[in-house]
Structures are given as C-alpha cells and as structure tokens.
Image (cartoon, rainbow, N blue to C red; front, side, top):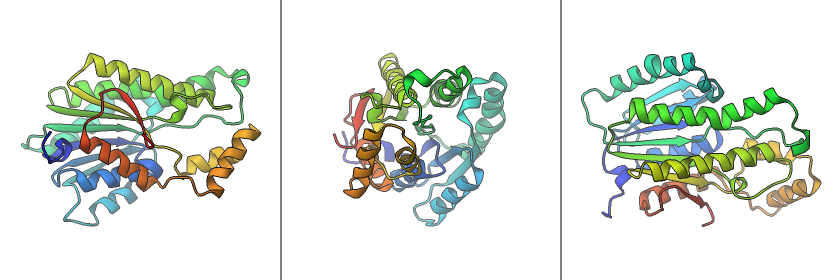
Length: 273
C-alpha cells in the first residue's frame, strides 16, 4: 500500500446520511479534512436547516473545503416507496451530481450510512405488539438503508473504480442489551447485510464501524429514558467517570481506519479495537 491513503489520492464523491448533527456531522467534517480538495459531498438528513449549518462549516475554510457540497432532505423510511426512490435518484441525486462532476473523472466514492433511530427504550421485547411501530422502525433502520445502498451502487456508482461503504454499527449489533431489542436487532441485521455484500462484491471495501459510547443527543435520550434500572445506572456511571467519547474522536478513529485500509472487507471494527 502506498504512503498516501487510497481514499485521498483522487477526487471522491462522498455521501453521508444522517449528516445533520452528532456523529454524522463529526464524520462529515473529519472526512473533509482528508479527502481530495476537489471532492463532492452529498449530505442527507431530515433537517435541511441543520444540513446547511454543516455545509457552512465545510466551506468556511476555502483552502480545505470540498469543491461541491450538496444538501438533500432525506427520510430513510420513505425509501421503501418506489415513487420516492425514483424521484430521489432521477430528479435530485443524479442531476445534481452530474452538474457537480462536469467532465471530471471521479474514480472513488464513499457512502457512509449513519442515518438511524434508537427505538423505544422504555419497552421490553415482550411489549412490542404494535406492528406499525415495528414496521416503521425497520423501514428507517434496515429496509430503507438496503434499498438506498443498492440504488446508489447501481444508479450512481456502478462503474466507479474504488468504492467504500461504511455502515455505522454498534456494540449492540453483537451484544444484547435490555430494552433495546429493536436497536440490537436492526444493528445486527445491518452488519450481516454488509458482510454478505462484502463477499458478493469483493471489489467494494465494506466496513461495519462501531463508534463506541459517544456523547450525543441519542445517548442522552437513551440514558434518561431506558426503563431497565441496571442499564440506566451503568450509563450514568459512563458520564460520571468521564468515559463517554467525543464525536470528533470517534470520527477521527474512523478516518484512520479508512486511511490505513487494512481491515478485512465486511469486518465489524469497534472504536476500542
């Protein structure tokens, strides 16, 4: 492997879902520091206003900012609808990317799947009886991701030489936690989906990255609302002992993993590994 990281050697197209805040924002800003200056960023989330704030941060330093930053309103649960998918790709993503790319060659793409939700930490597994609630959860956290990922690879990057896929995973994808049955199941399923994709498509570099216990709004909500007393106490101790990670530190670790590019495609890699 050359001294210069593959992922930063040439202009890239970088798509980040759930890019508006927390880890998604941190991942975006960290990647912008190492990707080629002529790269294109596509930032996707439900809040356009928050995405605009991230875009403003990206372009603040002209010498380091990517050449184009595209922001797209995006609700992953809607990706299961055919009409929504066709509009998203044919009317929004393809035209904007074509305009930004012009006649330049982009041999590298990176898709970072960060969009996701926690589920209801007040409910145990035996209390999950609302079919619509369960269906909506998996449309957001699994089904929508699968369809969006496939469409990106088929419609946007079918002929791209270097393709990187990052799934933001969790320790909950390989370890059970009380009152997090939906979250654990969704993360485990996402990991396995990308493991299968990795062996089916050996030319694509696939990473399941578990960012560790990060100090985000989601972590705060979980700590305050989880109904299991033992879990609540452990989360409280993380805060009191100063063991929560900063989003920027976890994002930097991901960047280092991608730059080294020595992971086995499809692996689950934790911040602490």
